[in-house]
Each structure stands twice: as structure tokens, then as C-alpha cells.
Image (cartoon, rainbow, N blue to C red; front, side, top):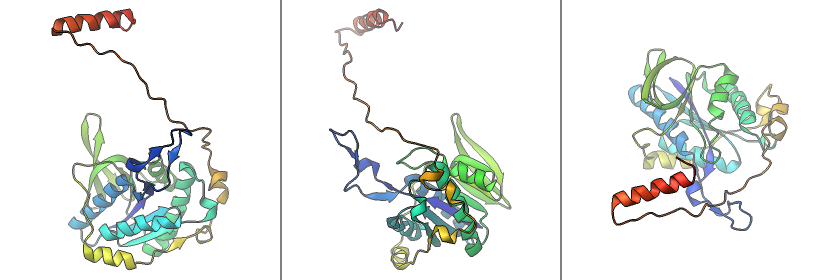
Length: 267
């Protein structure tokens, strides 16, 4: 089986602070990490390879040259090959433009690596939380898709995907080729081995530019090809207030709460 995983390098949102004057994110000094949901997709592919050792795992990321760090992390964990898609015309792409560029890159990578049986993505990136790129890639390629995957297993030419739903989980069958996006499962991703980490540090990661993607329509890439326009970003004001009810007896607290809610027109 041949699996491609789309990954993204994102700022560690646990380290981001807010400028108290400008109400904007302070990105300086914030470390970049592999998007956690993409890590779950990588682990899902690695578990398929555990059961089917002939499985090959390729990762691709679109971004600035420093995104190679995230790709090398994937190589250290489980990936066999990595590609970076990077060029000035791609800058400022929204989710639609990003998914289009990646779909074109996938076509090029398939020329080099062979056709992919499945494309795995994280359900969303923690710096944007749109959850759009994976499904949009499926639409560009015309592939069936399953979202909110927890686990995946290969049975013949069919992928069995355990999918998270509001009521619990569902088991779906999807034909190949397909796109699956993954959310957080019950287990943690595996750690890299020393041997793989050393090999990843030495690995050369090919960079695909616009010139390499034959047939790409650059009017659909970058700011020019992005219909999403961000007019304003701001930090919501922290709400203060509230009422603390603490009477000697629970019944008295309940009656006071009932009166307050009635006066406010809530009940």
C-alpha cells in the first residue's frame, strides 16, 4: 500500500501570548511544531504498515523552508520520503488555494513515487481550526472521503475506518483511492527511534516549486486565488461579574438562585 500524508508546521499554541495593547498574537520566540492532528494521521499510517510491512509512507507539506523541520520529524517517526511544496506564488494561500496547490503537488509526487492508495490528513491545523483542506483535496481529486477518523485498517482493496461521531463511533468501509482525515484517538503516537532520527537529520528533502507543477493555474494560488479575506482579528474582551451564592443551607441557596434567575427573565 502507498500512503501520502499531508502535514503542516504550526506554532505551538500553548506558547502563544497576547499583546495587551494591540490585542494581537505575539509570534516572536514561539516554537514551531508538527500539527498534532497530522501526527495522528502519521501514526494511523504507521499502524497499517505494522500489519502490512510492504506499505510505503510519503509525507508532503506546503510552507516556508523551515517546514522541513516538521517533515524531518515525520521521517524520524515513520515516513519513508518527504517533499516540501514551497514557492513565492503560493504565499498567502487560504484553504481553497492551499488544497488546490496540494492536489497539483500530489499529481507530481505520484509521478515520482507511484499512485497513492490513500491520502491521510489531520482533521485540522491548530493554528487555523478550519478543517477544510483535507476534504477540499478529496474534492479536487474526486476521491471519496471519511472525516474524523480514529483508526484505519486495510482489508483487501477496502479501508476500514473507525470514525468519531456524536453518539460514539462508526466503522465505515471506503474504496481506494480515498482521503481520510484523523482526529485524536485513544492512543498516543509513537516516538522516533535514534536510528531513524539520525537518518532523518541527514535526509535531503526535495522542494517542489510552481515550475515543477506542470499545468498548475497560478491564478488559483496565493492571495490571487484565495476568496477568503480576513478583515480584522481581535481578542474577545474577558467577561467579568457573576454572582456567588453561598447560604448556610442548600435549600436557601437554591431559592435565592431561583429568584435571581426569575428576576433576570431567564426562567
